[in-house]
Length: 354
Image (cartoon, rainbow, N blue to C red; front, side):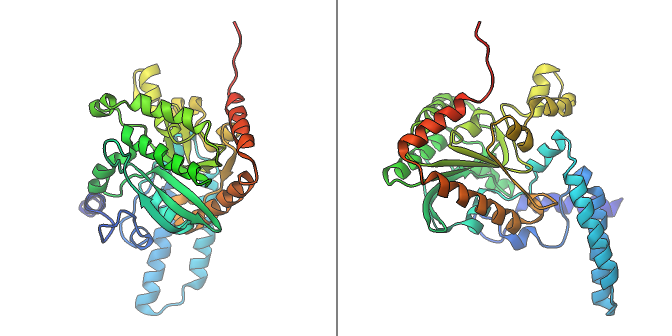
């Protein structure tokens, strides 16, 4: 028991004191993929057990010079099969857990792997720079694009600086400033959505968080350049929509997109978060649900163990999907883009005249 408690304590300390070695807000792959205590979800227990067996065999082979190739290959096959089987049959609430996984790649991790010539731009030119939203110029292969999105932190210090990925009004005003700059130069805009919601604090309300989001919805609907959004983790409520009115909406396989969190929904309908699993099913918040309903345009596959298991692989898949989408949208005129965009959102949902 003492050993288990020690492992838990070390894991918490790694989270609190940071997994990165420098002041760089990006988390390098070797920090997250290194050996040592790892975070895992309850339904991943069998996966972790097999991975632990493989690691023990490899350590034994290193120490004693044994040939364990056959055993490792057999366990590796079992591991891959179990990962596929597990992740293909996740319940909606389990999908929520994967979307929130603390080792899941964030926006800047994708920027590092997918884009070149990244130049960050800061500030809304009115109040201050909100680090919960990051944006700037970059190149997606031969396309010069404006990239922006919500950014969470990897440790407590960075999460406080980035407000846990919950933007203030100035974050959305910065985003709009950058999108208008992209429109001025005729460049596509790519947004990364990953937020538990806009920040609901007193200062945020005083500075007009509702107005800032609403203004973005209107202005994005009539920008005359290609707009593409991708939900990479959790996309909750107006905080996600504030940078999400785009020509095409892509979602990673285990990301979620909803008007409210399952816990919030359960608290309202049942006055208890104990019903969060039922709420998650009712909300239809998974990528495949939203694809069927016509909200999402494309589901980008993740590695068999989720995006947190292989950052490079999911980045390659997402880069390919974004490149194809931007290329096709760039062939349309500004008038065609606006007409198609408005038709897209007009067709979402159903209504009945009284």
